[in-house]
Length: 342
Image (cartoon, rainbow, N blue to C red):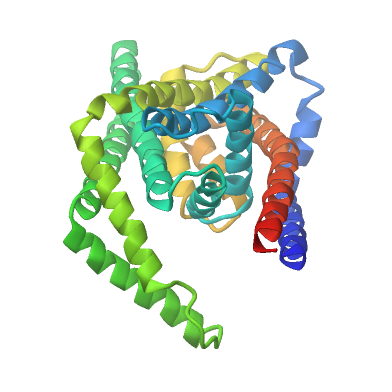
């Protein structure tokens, strides 16, 4: 176990270096921009960023507490877990899959079953997107009143809304039926184990089909229970609103520090499309592509400096704060696993 943890830490450090390498141009530009910004306004980004991290975790933890889990877990611990989640999601370019897997493992150490932990993260994504949709409608309305709406804004907004709604329908459709979940689990079993055998030349299976089936049964049971108590979703939804507002505020404050005010409404739309497309980029944290989309959608002259500066601060804070807690969690729970095995 100690050897595995050592290699995992080495791999994580390598990924951090890769992340910084992909962001090297942004880091250099941000360093030069610091000479021109109002540092006192820029410092407001720090509490906003950490609040954004906390809101990400709060969507998960508020749901779990409503289900009777994590009752004895202190808020400080959940805040640390939120930082760990953001760190893993940013460093590993897997569209949030690595973060979900890590959080499922992390929650299992606190007595949360795999199915419930997964559903909690489905709730997080759902709350984030539902809150974003509500804010998106308000943003489009404000832009319309302002008189600056154009066809591109309408097209992008409609595309975002349609994608979010369609994705939600697909997820609900799959997990609401045991038959569909069994089909999906078989496809997952064949796909992952098939690649594991053929590509990596391994005889043993990577995923046990019995474990997979039990996991999806737990997921379905919790989903059915959730449909009978929809009020549980209220707190995650409110935290989703807080998260989206905090994300937009990061850029608004950065622009203000550079001496410009940018309407939050187009920023919300730009953040939405950049985040969605960033899920499919192979660079860590969507570095490069995320910034390019933000700058393309906003006014280039105003957006370039603000977007780059905000993103660099995010990268530094994510790596600086998240890795420490991530490393400590690996050390703590790997040690516990070793003790249990003995």
